Image (tube, rainbow over all chains, first blue to last red; front, side):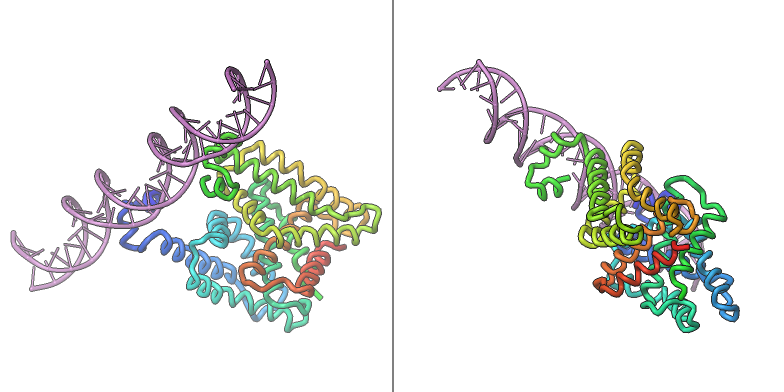
Length: 161
Length: 161
DNA sequence: AACATAAATGAATACTTATTCATTTATAAA
DNA sequence: TTTATAAATGAATAAGTATTCATTTATGTT
């Protein structure tokens, strides 16, 4: 908490005016990170364009977000296993991923994707990106354009009919 | 440390006879988890069998391990982002994944997999499994046989030529 | 200017947790 | 049995970190 306060340019006690305690701070921070990440994912997404174009845009946005906001991504990953997140935040953030859910559904409706449970499709997309970015980061091998394209191709081919 | 000692049926001080400090304990524990996980991955793997059979066995083993030893999986995930793991452990555990690396190379040599950097292929496999298991666990939806098969198909189709 | 309210401070407190060490208990050798 | 060595103990210490609160500073109103 003291470190967070310092980083925010506040005294430790001031933090407790805005957040009841550490738990609340973590929950609010998580929800905001989740919100901002999802918003980023749909930047420049035009539902009027053909599905593959739209999906590619979102996919690239997810990857880019995880790369450029790696610290936030790590924070969110850690929250997943932590005892801090409460039911309320869980429910709230589950709502937030709905747009991504809808996108995957569209892929199925247009017979582009396999007939697989929407959630499983979504998890597959997220998983391949997350692990790819994490690995690139820690092995200190920056993601080249071809590496990114390969990742996308694997993801796409995995889901397409 | 006291909780670990209690769980191990030891007094706190006794832990410090076997491990210099918490850092060393974490590093040793991580290395052992990694070792045991990789060993599990190759259970019943017969290199004489056709590639797809062998790969399926390993893939299923990885998934099964993550499900049955979820706590270890979480621990290893957390270590990844923690300040505890030292260079030595990093190097050591990188050696350990070589068998998995070899397996992916074989897939390329036999023209089954796409011509993609071996490491990227491996990360793709791991990533899709990890996220899938994690999600099943926290959403408390146990992985059905069809869910697992779908996961495998997506993974395989993503990598195959 | 005087007053009231809100926001900010950071040292002190309370709680948690890693580490030490003097002492005890087990094991083995003479 | 006696002695020596190794292993284990857990209360005490040290270090770290969340939270409180009496006091100070800023902001706005009459």
